[in-house]
Length: 201
Ligand code: ATP
Image (cartoon, rainbow, N blue to C red; front, side, top):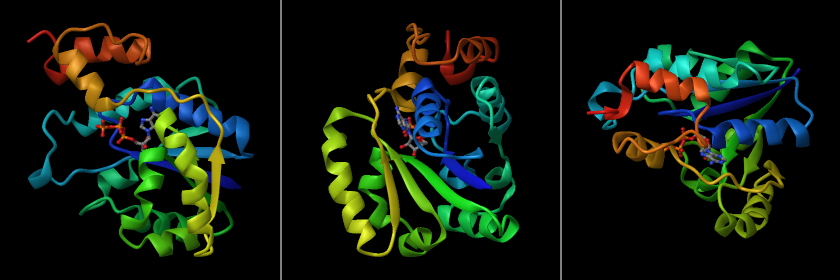
């Protein structure tokens, strides 16, 4: 199987994430995408981090209509910091016959050489990158080329960037601004019903 992993905090998951997965499915032959929310250790808790069960529920709502997508709680259950290399080692051991891919936005690719054990990550999977903004787009091929010199396989998916971040959305929600063009409609309702991110306070 050709399996891609898509990790993130997803606090909350937004349509930029969903768009990225859909564009990747169109451009790269894949059998499935495993979406993995990460665990933030309590002492590092990010301000306004929604509970794990809420982040999982919002992922389920957002990706319910994208076939071949699974939500995994592997990183949430694991003790310690969610290093991608540990996750990739786990999947390469538990799915030994699979070819692994790792999906990321352009901010991640452009800082990839600062990641913990990044050279090992290149040996474990093929990176797939989706641009988040026009400013990043032109920088991606040169960055990919330099990683290829280290033996890495990197695919840049040509996309029209869908510019949005979870930080921007948490801010908008706190101010009771309309986020419906950035969030799945069921997630808008979930956030309202569960009073997440200081909505209405
Ligand atoms: P925050 O603002 O809280 O840092 P974020 O919007 O960057 O959050 P993450 O959950 O940290 O979202 O991102 C998970 C993955 O999705 C990362 O690889 C990130 O680069 C990618 N990503 C996030 N937003 C977009 C987007 N709009 N388009 C493409 N990829 C994205």
